Picture 1 (cartoon, helix red, strand yellow):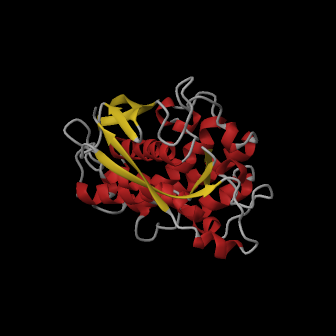
Picture 2 (picture 1 turned 60 degrees about the vertical axis):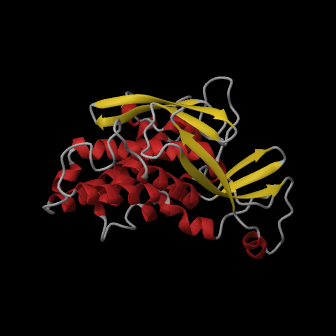
Length: 302
């Protein structure tokens, strides 16, 4: 659960809802300057490649489905634990990836492969002496990965190796498919894996206060200035930085602008509670009686 306290209100956004928002951004990514998913290089059936990539981005947190249905509750406020609290249990966090990575693998192995790369770089980044900056998640740009992923590097390194074995099996399957075989080439796989990371970060910036802002601007929930780094533009070799800057209330400028609609309206589904909240002892009845509100934002070119 993504929890942000702001103006005596607690905003709560589920991991699956946040991921769906990232998928919406992916489906609208691309214009005359930025390639759409599936079009970073010549491909067999680029529209199917695009569809698989959008699905992967929209479902990258599917391993949270079960947890979000019956969340662990905080002893302090009676609400679901926030993301940073849940991730303190490393084994439980890894088990969610063990559920989420293969969930779509039977019919959509490329979807599972992209999700696996998302997980891999969350764990591998802090384990490597010289990690690839092109795959640094936005969560890590202004701090150590151990803040979220824990300090037990040997465990993280071992789990990254486990994910690599999953990837090898998925790649072997895709290689045998005449249409999908080229999708695993670096020119396709790298920009799609990177786009998942970046749109995860962009969605998090609207759903929580987790994304590190530029120094002195921390507000969260669409109010922070930050840069999206290593953004694939026309190809994997053509990468740029996008400046993300709030311009007015819930209106956000992106320079350069990567979406096909200008302005692009975005809606975050959130439960917004008065703080302190007073949840019932019968949590599920109380929780589902609290309707989700759509908090609206706009991205535009300025």
